[in-house]
Length: 214
Image 1 (cartoon, rainbow, N blue to C red):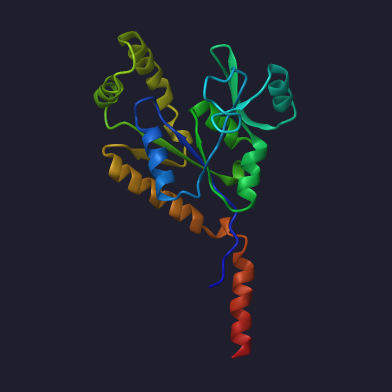
Image 2: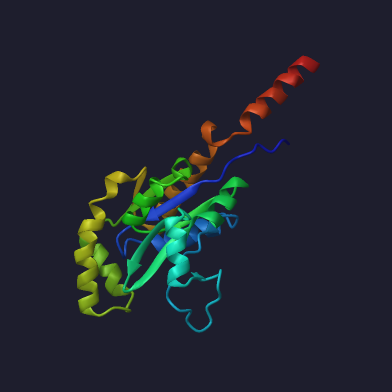
């Protein structure tokens, strides 16, 4: 059986907090363990037990700034006084050998990645909640945040949801099993696209050589 060369996909998942993005990302990676989850870089200090290159690539502020000015970051942002971003090199290396990479980022990061040098590799998927009441119920169901934090997340959600139209695909997460099935279907279809399989030309040439040899 001939293996057809395929360049990897850069899969962006975005959603408002509580819509189920992280759960769906974990389920997608369980469906195909060959998927790589992109490791972000940050200027914050490592926490106990964190390992450089596993949880994050830990960088000094000067090193992080150098990565941004030399176009080595696909996206970056400042959050509570520290910088976070997606290094281009590790992602590009995975895509080049045909491995798909998953990015769990917000709409702002998604915009930056879609404008980057890897834009042609991107498929972007936005996860919507079935209703705003359900979104709040899920946030409260975590049992992790105060009422004040939840109110802040809910207020931010309206702006986040307004960017759904920028994405290639939208999944309404009524049910995690159904949403996972839709997500897997999207990835399978994108992998099968002719323009994502540079090895198809050589494969068809091989078929023609088989015709000639008959």
